[in-house]
Length: 602
Image 1 (cartoon, rainbow, N blue to C red):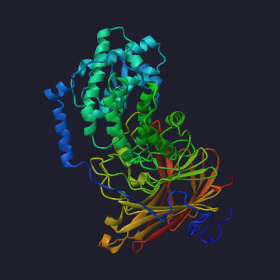
Image 2: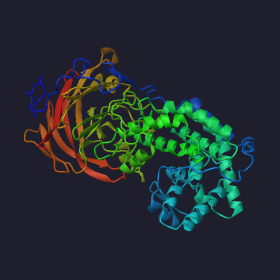
Image 3: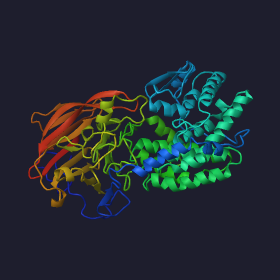
Image 4: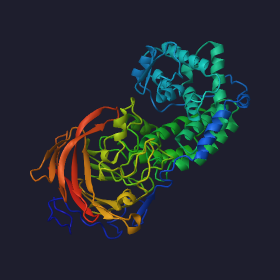
């Protein structure tokens, strides 16, 4: 392939980057909507989690819910019926439904026998208890292949047993976000749990639904801005809409969501937590709660439609050619099924976004090649306890084959991963990016939160007739090593040539008193089924994709080695893979490594 005009190819074919357009013209325009020459994304709040006063207030609030005064507030009339039923956009798993009918509740790798079940037993993992208290198992029962009568009887037996155990406040079962989820599940699957002719059971269940809503009248508004608060408010809104006489409640919940959603969903549709699994959860939540209006012949609230209109295209913009979203910031990879379900239900359909001026994710597409880059800082500690230290990592696909990927994540998997593996997936080394001195670009604390590290990320994105350029950098190593990291990418217009340069520069003198030289590694984790063969000069490798296509990788300025790696797919299956590691050492706190991936043949 001929190189763009002005490209110096003396270092080896495909190794050098062409210069990006010097200014914005008709043939060289930013892909992002913004026209600034450089954008900065700041990690506001950094490593500061919830304050001591916030934690004390949460404990005090929980204590208040156990007082006779709160019990008095929960009293009220029990509804005789519901006005409608929610439309659940997230189908359950028929296999899990069959197991429930066989007497087993299975979630997060844990099995509890239905007979004489104690929902609050300490032997149940917290993830299982949250799932069980939220009644999400109703989704699985709903789609089990058994006849309707068997499904209803099984659901009613579990509901009755839960009601027996949690008639009054219990911290885990009545937690605001869990209660909101339980309300949504009950309102969505009411035909399954309210078909009984036992009037006493029906009255207890309808009374419970009304009581949880009264609890959320206060509890939902005391949560910090988060996805948990969205769950609580969404449940409260749906209850207000579908329980007779709930107009004031629905209005208050909607007002809370109108204030909360713009704080969670960024202008470009990204989530404030930067985790795609959170974006998926919020989108499904809005579709579920938003169906309350149409169930009554009314429109969904404007804030629901507006948030979904930004969320879904941004989420789909993170897909590679295999229609799978990679594991970013604590979440597992997301498979095709939930994304297809969103596309069918959301007004934006299959639209996708390419630029992330606020979210920090960018998508480059040319020919059959897709590149997704994380060019933003990690989320603040108070927003996410499972973020990744993978700033400037990228994933790449050629058609349906993943060529470059990150190793994976845990949150969202059906079964938990072993602790050391889950922790390792969050490290910088588990991402396709540069690591200095085998140290994370952002610290991962013992409590799981993200500590000091990347506070500011810069990014510049442009395109022309030659292809797409992305230049980004971060300060994650500035305070510790006195070094800044920059990554430049160029994707040719036909998608057959990706070139990059990873540079280490000395930070301003005031950032650190001394700058000892450091070893560094640039890792490219290969997708499942990609076979790597080293070149004789240790400066590259030949890569064969599962579909048969060949790519040649070359590097200058460091040595290339091939090492074992892994990838966790959306189902939680571990695939043994390989990684290309380009190693070097700084000189006067400076280094520059050029590299390229070029398709060999068609």
